[in-house]
Image 1 (cartoon, one colour):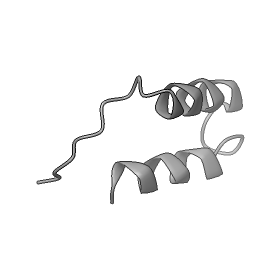
Image 2 (cartoon, rainbow, N blue to C red):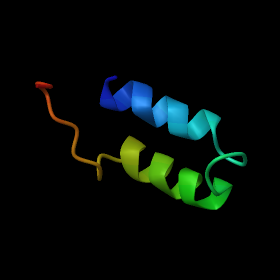
Image 3 (cartoon, one colour):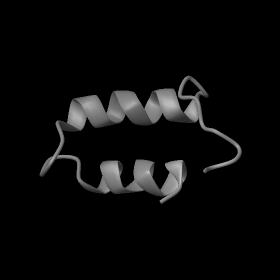
Image 4 (cartoon, one colour):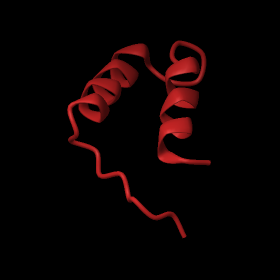
Length: 42
């Protein structure tokens, strides 16, 4: 699973598996580039 697919899975699970406020904060950080996403996945 790519980091982008993982982010989408987390966002889709907001409110059921994850706190929606935490997911929103994570999504904002992801969009703004504060989350390191490796270019090459091992």
